[in-house]
Image 1 (cartoon, rainbow, N blue to C red):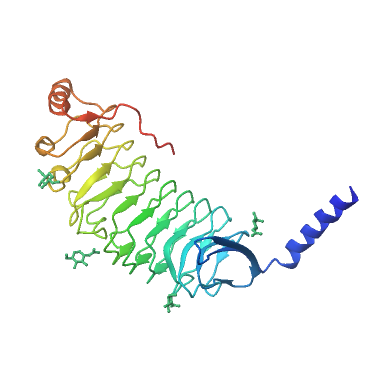
Image 2 (image 1 turned 120 degrees about the vertical axis):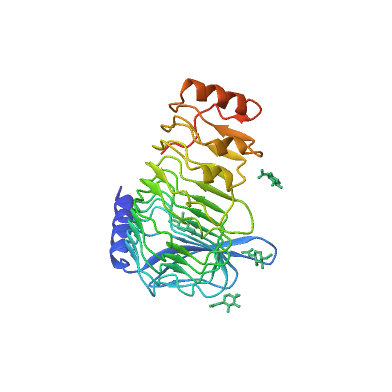
Length: 300
Ligand SMILES: *[C@@H]1O[C@H](CO)[C@@H](O)[C@H](O)[C@H]1NC(C)=O
Ligand SMILES: *[C@@H]1O[C@H](CO)[C@@H](O)[C@H](O)[C@H]1NC(C)=O
Ligand SMILES: *[C@@H]1O[C@H](CO)[C@@H](O)[C@H](O)[C@H]1NC(C)=O
Ligand SMILES: *[C@@H]1O[C@H](CO)[C@@H](O)[C@H](O)[C@H]1NC(C)=O
């Protein structure tokens, strides 16, 4: 009992003494492909040569400029569930993170202008936060970025220039948010070199601008569980969609261009308000196509 009390006390006082320090774990790759883990407690999160990942272990409500010093190439920066409320723009400037920044399950509310810029990362994961706004140019000049997760936030505001100069962007997931529309040119930031994936299921989308997907070519589009009463023809005629999910909306019919899609291989159409004539036409068209019958596996 005495020992336990001592240990508890020691840990409590340790927390207090080091309250300004940030605890983190570094994993380094050794020559023989083995890993070496080490824990650190510093004012500034600092990486080492051969660092594979950095995982922040203490709760840090605000990540400020100067708190990171990631010089040598480091693949992963992970900071999940650390009660992070705010990212000061510039905190990631010149940080040599090459694969992924993952800040899942925090308390972030706004992604401010200039927060993620001039980085080499391929993947950015901000899912399970409380983000309502992604400001203009919040994410810019990331030549290798190809996958972004913003799902399970509360996003109401997004701009046609929230992302700028991200020419490799291929997979974008913003499902389970509060979007009410998809505006003109919103997805122009995605790559023009190949067909892309867009997930905006489980929002409150009532309106899709006819130019929402202009400049890109979508092959996997999830619009299910929204409030759509119509979908503009251009969505079907200007893309080469193979997987299309529009179930659980308020659609009564679809424009003629829908039936011109030649490459559809899977579709989800259940739980709309199809009129009986339209329903028959739809069944005729979709009988050769695999229908998704199970409900969307996403739950928000
Ligand atoms: C670093 O600290 C974490 C959390 O306290 C612990 O789970 C992990 O085992 C530690 N790693 C090393 C190498 O001591
Ligand atoms: C990033 O890491 C690479 C390889 O370790 C190094 O050549 C380069 O100078 C680093 N960049 C910065 C800004 O530290
Ligand atoms: C896209 O394709 C063009 C022409 O082939 C090429 O120059 C460019 O680097 C590619 N961009 C990306 C992001 O892959
Ligand atoms: C179907 O896909 C093929 C190759 O994936 C493409 O060449 C063709 O243009 C597509 N057809 C339509 C109607 O988009």
